[in-house]
Length: 289
Image 1 (spheres, rainbow, N blue to C red):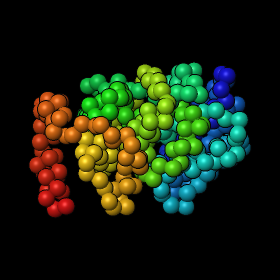
Image 2 (cartoon, one colour):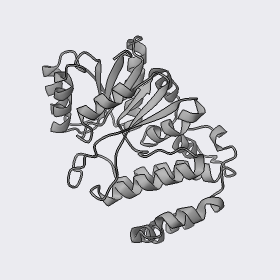
Image 3 (tube, rainbow, N blue to C red):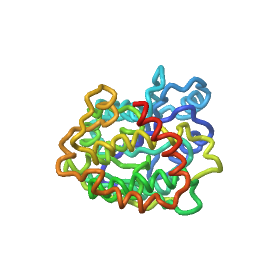
């Protein structure tokens, strides 16, 4: 491995999966010497972190007094690595909930080059819970239609990010899940190629260790896309700017929603829960706001 990599794991209310993940990394010959940073994003029960601290003296654990969101946790890790590890060329991120395998991390590390953003992309087949499958397919579809960028997995947490790009990402306003989405949208603007590496798709029944509600997460991402497909409508509120986490430059020459509405309709027409959601949630929200 010619480029020095640091491994970063954001964690909120983690369980045994984080213990297992750290153990696997520390036992792996090609990974155990890489810097490993875990960011505790405001977890109340500290038992897991106490166990990690007691067992791995070289492990860096950073703590948030309060929950800041996944984007905020990633920023804390990015900033620590940039300030304390000048030799690092890239930062590998993966989730703490058991959805990423160490074997796939190694595949992504092997594919990394300092001028490329590496994404570990999952295969969203029928075995994946429909909420995750639909949300990811919808956002990938809309991004391709609005920007021309073909991301197979817009929500993957397994990435290898050039440290120079991580530095730029610190300026993104978003601290929630929009931060990772903004990272994808801004890559092209920053002259960064994106390499997509197929990885395993791991979902436990009910996804019990995932600490986010899919509805606001997808809503946040669609809020960013709405600015892409409606470039003439500028957000003038602080919340709107925070939601986008991006400049207006990428919106130049982007299509209006009217131009892509037929493609969107063709994609979602056969999903009954889409009609249910629009009628029961989206339309009332639009009317009230």
